[in-house]
Length: 143
Image (cartoon, rainbow, N blue to C red):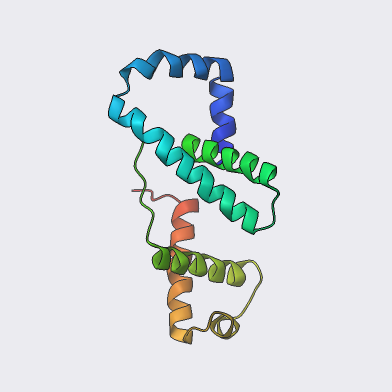
């Protein structure tokens, strides 16, 4: 995301981007505008609360929250994104961490099964799925 943000700033300077936004504000529906404050405040509050629980000072948490929201806007602003429910998201994060433990740290599947309290065949399935996903990201299909 940071790369996308930096690339956007290289393409559009801050001034040009601000001018473009101001130019198009009249075209944005009132319904869309009414949703912004509620959703933006909710996201900033959620990010800020999490950062404070992690030990950040309130001023740092607010600054980081704004930066995260800006990156989120840069990456997926203007489009709908799907966020899985809490349990599904936790499972996906666990699977990513399991794969990283295997690929970066060299943990063996039986160690992963013990660490994540999973059956060994399930660990192999997760490794296969994650490996395929990571290969698709690195090596796009030719045809």
